[in-house]
Each structure stands twice: as C-alpha cells, then as structure tokens.
Amino acid sequence: MALLERTFFSLTSKLNFKGMRHILIPDTPTIVIPVRGAKQKYHPDSFIGFRVEPRENHNRQYVSHPLIYKDADPAPRFMDARVRAILKDLTGCDHSKVFRHRALLSISAPEIVFFTDEQLKIAQNDAKIKADKLLSMPPVVKVRAEEVQDISFDPALQGIMPNFKIVFTDISLGIPDNKRIIVVRENSGKLRHANGAERQRMNEIYNPRKGRKHYVSELFTAKCLPDVLARGQYEFVLDRACLQFEPDEPEYQSVVAYVYEALDKKQHYDSLLSTRHYGPMLFFLVWHKCLNNFLEHHLMAGRLDVASQVVKLYCLLHQKSDVAKAMTDFRDPMHVVQTFVSLECMDTSARVQLALKQCKELLRSQQQVEQNVAAALGQSS
Image (cartoon, rainbow, N blue to C red; front, side, top):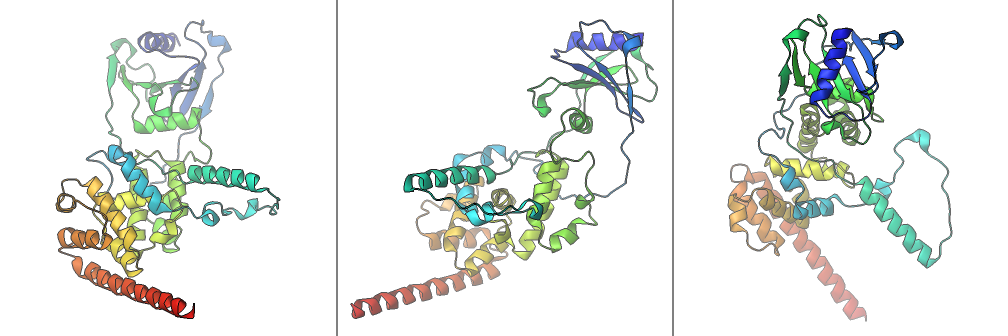
C-alpha cells in the first residue's frame, strides 16, 4: 500500500489534476481504488475497494472497411460553410419525417391547439429550430492515431502489482472525454498516457453516455449487419453507431462506410432524406469519388438540380480535379453535369450518359406539357 500511495503522489506531482482522483487497476480482474484529493492523508484502514469483473471476450468479428478517413483529414472540408450549405440543402427538411414517432411505446394522443396567426408563426419558428437541431450532422473527422506517449519511468515501482496495470483517471466535471487526463502505470514502472481502448473504458465507467453500452453490440458484426441492412434499416444502424462510438474511432468509420456502401449499391438514397445522416453519406460518396450510382439514380428521376449541386460539391472537395479546373460557371445545370460526366466518368460513363439522355427527354416532355397547358389556359380565357 505504501508503494501504491507513492505512485499516486508521484503522479499528481507531475500532472495537474482537479477535483476527485481515482486509481484504477483495470486488467483481469479489475480492482477500483477511489482516492479523494491528493493533499488529503490516505488511511488504508478506511479504504473500501470493490472488484469489477473483466469484459468477456466474445471473439466477435466486427465489420471493417477500407474507405475510412485515415489519410487526409476531411474535417476542414466538412466544416466549410459552402460545403455544409450544400449538404443541408440536399438533405431537405420534411417535418412529417423529422418529427415522426420512431418508438411505438412512446406514442401519445395528439394534442389539438387553436392558434392565432402570431402564435402560429412562433410555433412554426420553434419547430424549425427543433428540426435544425434534429438534423445536425454527425462530424466527419480523421480516424484517431493510436500513438501512446510515455511520461516517465520509475524502476522502484517495478513489480508493484504483478499482472496488473494501474490507471489514474481525472474525473473532474466539465472536462471533455477526449481531453480528460488518463494515464497508466505499467508493471515495468513506466508511466504513459492511456491508449484509445483504455481511455474509452475509463470514460464508460466514470462518464457513461445515455444509450451507450459497455460492450459492443452484435449488430456490428459481419454476421448480423448484412441481414439488418438487407431489411433497409440504414438509419437505425447509423443511429446506433453514433451512440456506441466516437466519430474518430476506426470501428465507427468502418460501420458507417459499410452502411453507405450497401445503400449505394441498392441506390436507397431517399431512405436517408430529411435525416442527419444524409449529409455525411453524400460527403462520403463525393470524398471517395463514388458518384456514378448517385448521379444515375437522380438523373433517371429527373432531378437535374440535385446532380448539379453534387457536382458543385465535388469541385469544392477536389479542387485540383479536371472538372474543378474546367468549371467556371454553375448556372446551367445540364452543362455542369455533362462536363462532370465527360471528365470524371470516362471509364464508367455509359450508364450515367444513358441516365443523362433520359433526363433530357423527361425535362423536354415536362416543358412541352407545361407549354400545352399554358396554351390551353390562354385559349380558354
């Protein structure tokens, strides 16, 4: 116990802890030792320790995907005001979908209220603010680097607890989990910062998040995830991934990339419209240059304006590309899409070219119908 006390005061003299301090020994099994205040005298007789059983290793094979953000950092591009404006505009805001009941057990009877015009405007403004909050996009960042920084080495503490590591966690309030001081004293006497897995487990213990499990769900395994996505439950999986993981975790980025790829193959893009996941999904497709299916889907539906906006987004994210250098004016949507297809889809342009041709015919027929209707109304008047 004297060595343990020496370890604690040695650590607190090097690091600036605030509030309560805890000493943790989280290997097999886990022993948790609470310590309050570095300046308070430690009394071994008054110590009450408790045992935490280790995590069970289920040897699950979770999904992995090569298209994660591990090279260039996408955060500066994703936070660009022009990029976010395009993503928000294309996401849409269908209030019937944004405010739909997703849990059957929580459905309550509808409430009917009579409003004046002024009260109605206030209620509509409040609904718009709430919808914007519900549609706030999950951040897109680079995957975190697993680099562990050593702090010091004390040979006198070698073998202090055989087969155990001692983890010191600052549990002060008001500190973000990614900036919380968490350090580990190895059995060899080395003191280092905690790695990603250790930091995640300490945060799970001391600062649990609502909806986040202390274990990774079987939903994200290579066995179960394809079956869930085959039923079209893309939003459910993405919501669960946002709850369970942090945006810079490789597991999170692998899961969402797997979902985006499955959605792209079936062209089920509309299932994420008016959700907070549509923007990151579109950003993923544009960042990794996987736009053929997306353009084909929207051109076949006659959504030329959506295709033009996506090409503009492509030029913002890939400013050194041929189409970005060639495009100087985005006012003509047909010219924008034709330029992109000719320069960026040369190898796989047959399907996109066919969709573009059909879009032209569809728009031409719609224009002819509008002209006929206008002529008929003119004659009748």
